[in-house]
Image (cartoon, one colour):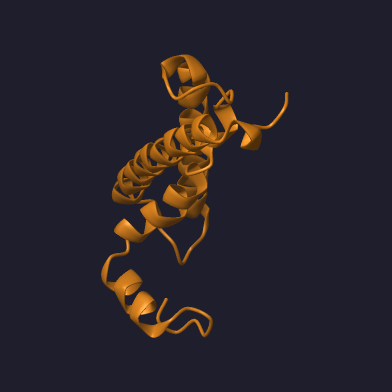
Length: 120
């Protein structure tokens, strides 16, 4: 990764030193949007968030992770790693948790400024 021109040198070196851990980063970023996608726009509580859809979002991103990791079996220069899958699952969970914090903060902000609330 450190040889790729558009990646900063420090980030490339970190990625080369942590090949399994780096899998969690893109899945963390991808899963940040999951709580926003399943939120209903209600007040911050469990009633405003459909937990079933949140788990379905986690499962869908996890399927993408496992599919992309298993496809590496067919590429001669790559290999399938259980560590990649586990770190990716951790990244998905951490991203959803961070997205939930952002979602709840956004709902609190909308409660304070009701004119900012979108009309459905």
